[in-house]
Image 1 (cartoon, chains in turn orange, red):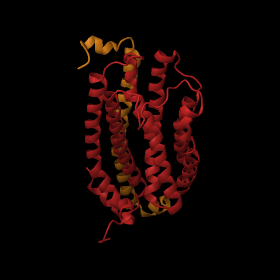
Image 2 (cartoon, rainbow over the protein chains, first blue to last red; image 1 turned 120 degrees about the vertical axis):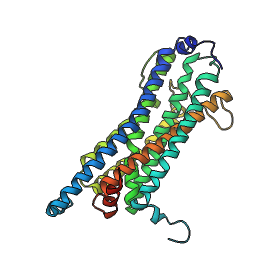
Image 3 (cartoon, chains in turn orange, purple; image 1 turned 30 degrees about the horizontal axis):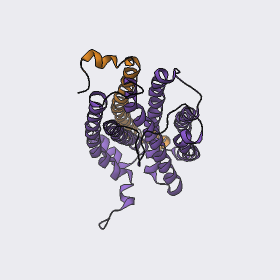
Image 4 (cartoon, rainbow over the protein chains, first blue to last red; image 1 turned 90 degrees about the vertical axis):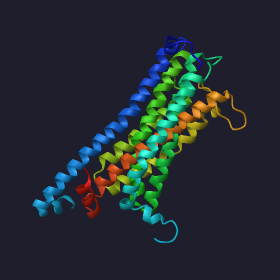
Length: 67
Length: 247
């Protein structure tokens, strides 16, 4: 272990703002991207299921939608 | 299909979709493993840098992000070209799935670069060859995404996107070699096969972080390509069957 104390670690010499500003934004992006993808997938599946049900009720609509 | 490895078989979205689904957790596990190891080495074990103090630790974020932003572009252009040349449905979807992740890494490269530049150079941003060409890379990603989104017919969108992606490839070597070709404020490459200017432990930390970003990018791209497959193949029987099964 390189650091003597937690406050040393957080201070990063005099560069705490820059190091942690980089770390936090990168971590946020790399957490948010997969979270949004999981949510988007659920929404997509719901939407496709609704479309599928609608097509079953009204086959003419599905022919129009798929050209 | 019985003998050897059949590329046509695996390039069919129907075969690829469940395969990708099975691979995603493994890439997440690897990403977490490499990420934790890389952060421990980079932030807890590696000693301070004689010239830059603790601020140099941004290297463990900045270099992997920059590498990925360039590498993902090359992979994206490769898939786009394959789609353009052979009309494989899946390769165009792969290119489309990679673009947002590449754009995010390009953004992260610029962001961490700005936060590194301020304490070391005294400026968040300079119009220097390395920084400017990386900014152009971000614009290329955004342009690719916007162009594809603006064309309704998926096949035409794929073609237009592929041409843009291929033209933009010229920018990647420009970024990579910019520190050699021009006088720039940006430091030269730290990793060199023959003689690295970094201490071993720093190099190990950086490579672990880069591997983590690599595994992350694959996992996320596979998640996105599965969404694209479902959307584009929604009129096929197998997707309808899949939708009935999904929880």
